[in-house]
Image 1 (cartoon, rainbow, N blue to C red):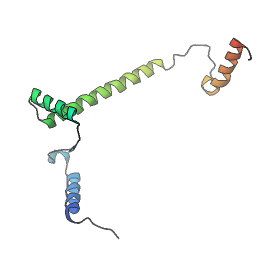
Image 2 (image 1 turned 180 degrees about the vertical axis):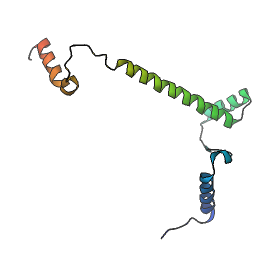
Image 3 (image 1 turned 135 degrees about the vertical axis):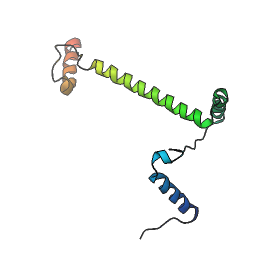
Image 4 (image 1 turned 30 degrees about the horizontal axis):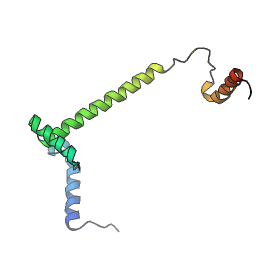
Length: 116
């Protein structure tokens, strides 16, 4: 047996279902955000909106775009660093180093410090 929402929940459910079925170009807002800001953050948002002459929504959209680009750039930087290190191990290391590193490390420590 399936239960259906009633009252306000039913209205919300129907509105949400309708919003999901509309193509993105027909819906006025693709994604609505309701965020809680502390006093300092709210002040910063109001300052940016006043300074730029943009709405708070426009300031938030710009902030998301900039943060997204920053994170993409940082992720790409880490990937480039990792790729630059791949295959740069010193020659002469055992081919099975990753599988037997504990045994190899133990042998080199015994060689260096003796058996204690």
